Structures are given as C-alpha cells and as structure tokens.
Image (cartoon, rainbow, N blue to C red; front, side, top):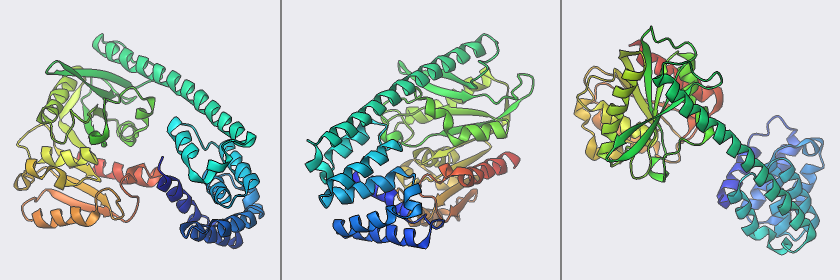
Length: 386
C-alpha cells in the first residue's frame, strides 16, 4: 500500500466534508495543505483543533485518524500519534498483511517501534488480519464448493444450490484447463431461450493466475445487471500469460466458451452481446472487428484501443453491430484524450462505434455505486434492444 494511496484517500475525504461545519472543514483543508508542504507540526496543530470540535469527536473515518497520526509522528508527539493510530485501527484501518507492512515501514512511526503502545497497536492489527483471513478463507471455501457443485448440477440436469447462482466450468487449451464462470438468473428456465452477456474482466496483464477462487468475484457489477435483465452472464477468466492482450488462443477460446454455454443452457443465439472493462474493453474492439455471427453488439468500458492496434481493423467495425464505448474524462489509467483521438481518427470508417464519456469516476466508474451501475446497465439494455 504505497504512501500516495493513503494520502490520496485522505485528500478525497478532505474534499467531501461539505456536510460538516465550516470550521471543521477548514481545519481539515488546512491540515491537508500543511501535509502537502511537509509542515507536519502545523498539520498536527490543525488536526488537534479539528478533533476537538463536535464533528471531530464524532468522526468515524479511519483515514482521517491515520493521517492525523502521521502528522503527530513526524512532529514527535508520541501520545497523539498512538492515540489516533489506535482509533484508526478501531475503525478497521488494517485488514491485510500488506497494509500492516506499509504502516510498519512508514517513516512517521519509526521512533515509536520500541514503545509498549506501538507493540500493542500492531498486535491488534495482526490479530485483526488473522481473524479477517480466517473469515475470508471460510467464505472462499463455501464459494468454491458451490460453484463446483452447481456446474455438476447443471450437467446432471438438477437444480442449483439454493443460495448460489454461479457455476464454474472449464475449457481445455493445449492441455491447460481454462476456467469460466456462468451466472444463472433466478428466473432462468430451460424451456425459454435466454439472452446472454459475455464480460471480459480487466487487470489481465497484472494477474498471475486465474482468480475464480475469490468469493468477492460475485460482487462484480455485471452479475447484478444479469439478474436485473434476466440474462445469463458468461465470465471468462484470463491471466497474464493467457489473456486478451497478446495471446491469440485466449481470443479464440472465447468462441469456444460461448459454444459450450449454448450446449449447457437455453440461449437465445440472436441475443448475445460481448464486452468488458479495461483490458477486457480493449479486447472488445478486436471482437467487434471480426467477421463473425455470434455477437449482436458490443460494449467497452474504460478501454484503450491503442493497446491492441495491431489486432484491430477499424474498417470492420461497420457491420451493422453497434459498439458502445464509455470512458471517464478523469481516467487516470488511460488518458481520455488519447482514446478520443483514436475515435476521431477512425470514426469515418468505424461507423458502428459510438464513443461516449462521463465527466468523472476515474477508470473504475462502473463501481461508483448506483450511478456507475445505472450507466453500465443502460448501455446493456440499449444493445439488447437493438
């Protein structure tokens, strides 16, 4: 957890305090400015005043307390540093080993490492990590058992597990088992053809292994959209050495997966759309430029076609199948201007490409609560309705 991560979160918090009193807000903003200027003792004074207000006494955000502790640590106020760090931990500051590693290496607290207070706080952090890991291990165990069981139930023509709508399947590519998830909405019927959405996840270039074992995968926005629209969700898994960036076999495998899902489920073959986010959204441009009859439309979220320029024939994004791409103007991963320039350069030939924007939300704007989800879902609805 790099220092900029903590500070950026803190800065975000400082700019979203409009519901607080003006005095409290001003003090936090002053503390922010002092920290940026490395005037830690000034920041400490401002934090003390802020925390003495009624809003400060009621503050529940762990990052406010953590940043206050940093200012106190640098200003050699051990009591305040440990008090605020302890309060930050009470509010859930550390839940993972890498977070504790960062805090232990933070130069603001080096002088405190031998104190009894520091040892006690770190001990509570380690305990919290252990408890959290045990809980997550159990959730992962239940998740993996359910997705494997559901896949078998599908093959055996049995009902799904009552508390799970996910099933795990595999294709084989050169002796490698490649996983993909299928989400089955509650209203699914094997007597009525269902629309289907293929979603290519992001982060492929940074993923060392197929990540289906994490129970939190079920929280991806595409799955709630599938439930709302009564659509099957096909969720291929990619990784660094088998993903939709430079591995042609990974691209070809998507068609294999869709063919298999058609055999296992009642799918409306004329109502299948494909898309994805980040790397997955970029890969969507490749599929949209292919001569194929599988997909009726495409969506690309926070994508940069520049990553795959050698694979994309923009002239072929003109086959009567709409491609809707959306990028945030404040995207910190793929510069909006760069993506927009590619669109402007190719829009005369890519007649089916519709480029849209949102003003804010950064690279992961679809995860921005209801607002991002509604934008995402509206695109899916539009493509299904065409």
